[in-house]
Image 1: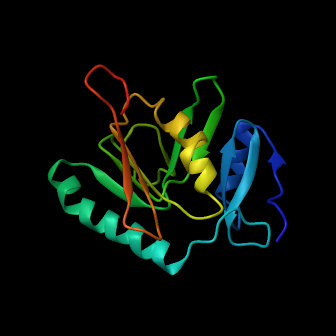
Image 2 (image 1 turned 135 degrees about the horizontal axis):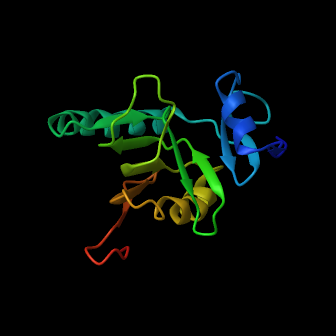
Length: 165
């Protein structure tokens, strides 16, 4: 399998074209790449990956409702500026937010919880670039990194002094 074909475009071009794209794509500082759905895909989720994602989202949903929050599995984009000012739009496996979300929204910018289930193709990005981007979000309280092949979850949590552990 060849590496993904990265496509350069502006943030505005990405947002305008994403709704019509036949595949889900992420935007990272001016470059766009497909997540899955074609031969140049970044990631193809295994059945285990899908089960883990749905189990986490399903378990979070009842608690989120009691707090008037929302939980999304795989299809809600999170947008943020990295610490060096580059805009990114990622599709986490699970995201929870208490921000007001319009029924037609495709992106959120104030998640309180983000979960990524690791796969061989996304592992490096989930453990490096995404940690860096996600922890720059003032609203984020926890980033969970879930191993798909072993029983291991890493929790990166915001501390009262705004540091991360």
